[in-house]
Image 1 (cartoon, rainbow, N blue to C red):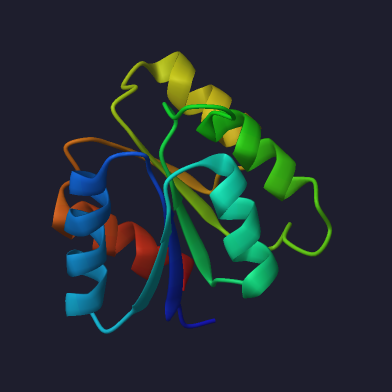
Image 2: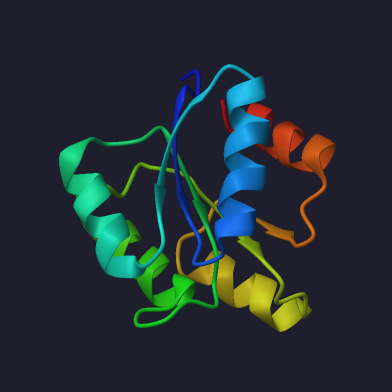
Length: 121
């Protein structure tokens, strides 16, 4: 599967812009959501090939949202890469246990993120 359509879920406009610009520059189509509720609405509108998920957000956090998406049959096959400032090994392990395919810490290294995306595609 080639990854073309990406949903970025992050409550930071700066992160959204940085990641969206990076992915656009690599030929991908991007939609964004600033909360868990908004992300679920975006999923209902159109199923992405990949989700980049922040952890620390108002309302539902990224761990909870990842678990919810992963347990929903219609969305369970969407790979999720957690992109977060939470850099402890226990956070990474917990994120993967919730259903994330990979985990990357902020500040996001563009080359590292693109390698992780290519590995999924």
